[in-house]
Length: 309
Image (cartoon, rainbow, N blue to C red):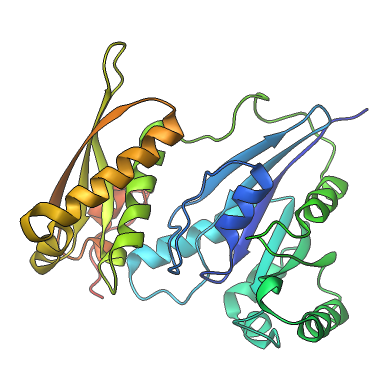
């Protein structure tokens, strides 16, 4: 039997359920999840392997109209992922867009739909929060466009129809040797996921603009044969006024966040760690090409200058 392998991009608007879907498909918790939009900032790669196939999933940031340079780079991640994909899973939150009009009229969505070679599967998500007539109506409307190679109603949260999603992916995968060893789950290192877990806790524990103004930088990560691993993480904020919010009165907020992040990192790494957190101010880092390059959002040296929000 020929081996089938390919790249599958998961795209959609912010909070459509992309990260929850990828974690369901993988059976592993790779992408961080919060109830706030724009949690995912970078492309997260997850690998699902069997004897017959290998699916390389790409969880991407939510599609939006960029307001500053960081969001421009996030949108570029989406287009770069789609460009090389064999299959595109497009998510629509039926409760946020019952008619599908906002989805179909979005300029970035239309650009992705114009991709000639990739198979396009539309997943109508969060049907557990909707009613059956609405779901049927949206399915019929999307099928009538003749744009998609399949339309499947799902609940990424409950796992409803996830098996059907896997089946249609496998059916549409090209014949190709595996790209990665069977035991490999992702292409990112442990430092990356430690930073993501800390950032997840920031999104869960803080409100308003603070989570969006923060970045996490792992300054030191020491694996120890005896004793706990050591992780030193810098929490970057944009304004002096945000620093005391993260720290909290008598350091209570950062202690709580550190404790929750440490437990989550230990669950992920399956070993004990000592986590040290520091808070640093880097003004308007989201619009600063130099800092965005340092944090891994810009890989090209062509980006110069600075943009204010």
